[in-house]
Length: 335
Image (cartoon, rainbow, N blue to C red; front, side, top):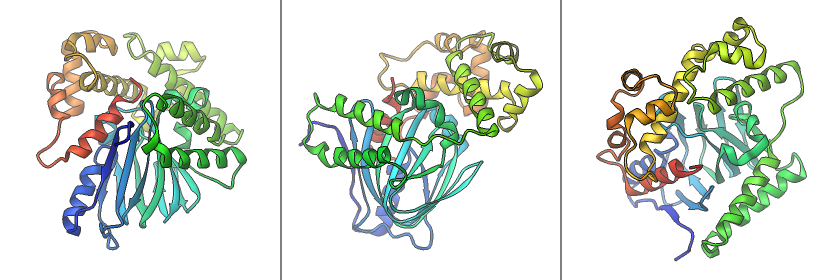
């Protein structure tokens, strides 16, 4: 047995049962739907390795349609980046800003804090899941690169990243627990170096300002006074300019509230926490003035009270243990 924790999907001989198990296995990341070409036969499989700070692995997926809905994004509250290197197959990636075709030897980047829809043929790919914070100074690019394609043919660093990622996955069965942190850090560093830089035009400058504002909001979620006045003063913006930045998010106040509630969900469902945190502590830590206001906003967003969050995030009646394991790993990254 390898020292590195591994999670495997093995198909069922019955294609119908195999498809059901497959959808359960993907549930921590995507909702999977069949298409006419779907066949969850013996070629379907998935391996994921937990290196502590990142997850790596490979997948052979059937033709399918995948969705990461706004509801799923809000419910999970994770802030990670999934990058896939396609070895075979094709996909069409749709976000609220773009539609992109992914071919073999292409990388595709998913910001798991944003919705996405993927329509794909049977695909074989190598994966890495990285907490946004591990990308360092390049983390600010993630929002604008959601659903973006970059190719192994683009530059030498991208080629190095592809080669290293493949070697890491191939070596995970032989790595020791002591070796894993260094290997994971190197993978995250190469991943950051390989991210493409957007073109330096006016639109990109505006986008970078938007990213800076969003980073400022994330860093100050626990400050009750966080709002338009505080942000405008920090960035020298007019209220009209700020409101335009968040028009697609139903306004800056709505964006702040949703980020606070996502952070609260992470705190309430953290599997590594020593006991359930006090509701009042979570409320104050996420910038709410009092527990009653927090509980009302939380229930409006998620449909249940904060005290019930851990139970609601648990396994449903048909959820597999493997999907639970993968979901726990994803939630634990970055804590």
